[in-house]
Amino acid sequence: MEDVQKLIQETIDLIKLGEYQKALKCLDRVCVIDNAEFHFLASLIYHRLRDRGSSGRMIIKCLLTDPCHEKALFLLQHLFYRAGRLNISVSILKRCLIISPKSVFLQGKFSHRLAVSGQQNQSVLISKKALLKNKKEFEGWFNFAKSLESAGQLKESLDTLVQIKKK
Image 1 (tube, rainbow, N blue to C red):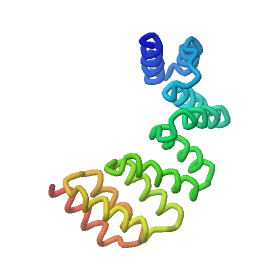
Image 2: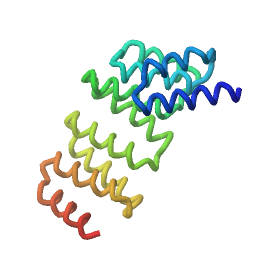
Image 3: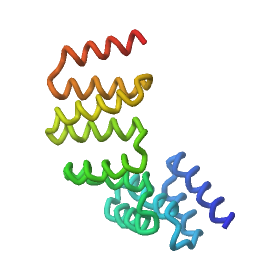
């Protein structure tokens, strides 16, 4: 099992270097059928190689092994977002937030997807709710300002950005 972990870490290092073909060859040396991280890394590599079909298939294999694999779910919603399937993207982000409810990053993406899908007022409510949970988080304030801007509340957005700068 340790060898599998070493190969997975080597694959991660190759992905960080942008060596996607080498990373795939590294994964080929790992013959693991039920390892969610293995399938996720393969999906990420295929995504970076712009092979959406293979990426999607690997995400499904990952999620069959670990239905709560947050990174795989996030990549899946991203594929749907890029394909213009905003409602599906939003639904998957809701699932991600159930898994990691305190993630400011995910809350920001969720708010953005709502705004892009025409639900600007809902985007503002989600951003405000996230901000109330953690008022010290810079990213939360920034997400709130962006959601206000998308809802056409430009003065409030600017006031929020000024508040951020003062902090």
